[in-house]
Image (tube, rainbow, N blue to C red; front, side, top):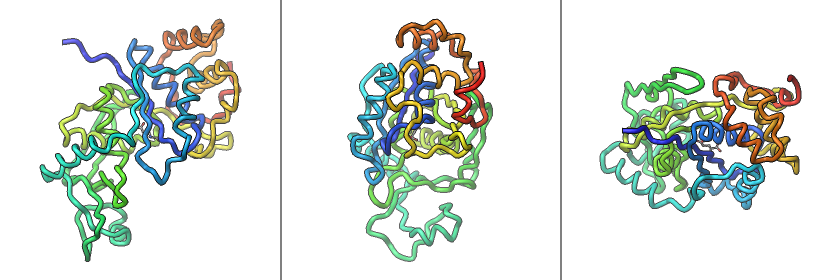
Amino acid sequence: MTSPIHCGRFAPSPTGPLHAGSLLAAFASWLFAHHQGGRWLLRVEDVDPPRTVPGAAQSQLDLLHYLGLQPDGPVLWQSRRSDVYQHALDALLASGRAFACHCSRSELAASGGIHHQCVARQARPDPAIRLRVAPGSVVTFDDALRGPQRQDVHADVGDFVLRRADGCWAYQLAVVVDDAAQGITDVVRGADLLDSTARQILLQRALGLPTPRYAHLPLLLAGDGRKLSKSEAAPTVDGGDPMAVLRQLWRLLGQPAAALAGASTQADLLQRAAAAFDRTRVPLHDISSRQAHSGP
Ligand code: GLU
């Protein structure tokens, strides 16, 4: 049997314009996939209406298009997939893996925000639904960039939310269902999501879904060392030349500028980048967006 072809994805939340850190994840996931001769897909993670900014998804997609990062299939919009998430939730409820939780915020605060058992004094009309995480739920996985990882999900996270009390689908459930639905074999994303991965693996196991490989990229910090905020628009893309933006992202990923030096068109540049990409050069420490302007 041949192993499934590499399928990567970029899955932005439309909470504002893409910042340079998100573009780094977009380009890196594209490079991982294209270097392997694989596919790359897009997903709009618009399951959180209170945080969704009207028009942001389209401008994110436009920007990716402008950079020449074309998906190899239709874009998946999470806001249109409630039925699929409900189906997964029903299966978990039926098997007893998920349960309705009536705890209030203050009741949860008493246990440091970690849920191990319901302590609600009264039933809520709008309970959250959580995944039951048994003691000893220790998840290990090999991050393609960072090596072996381990998390005791019971101790560190507890029973986690699948559908929120406000009725919104939790990121953890939607991402797991959709990575499987899109046939994703390789998740390449920012290190801020490293901590979510063990939860996602537990959920994949509970739903009988395959576990993709994971690679967590360094975080891109603002020039002054601050973490770029979600609402901070990419400093590199305000009408800039797309080839210059791609070259800058390439450098931030630790790749040699010389590999793209002779590229005359955007398509040529992307082709050279896909061929020359070397994941072992990707830095593991957080990187400053200043670094893009210095060095050979
Ligand atoms: N939607 C998430 C974000 O924008 C990314 C989810 C993922 O890559 O798993 O931070």
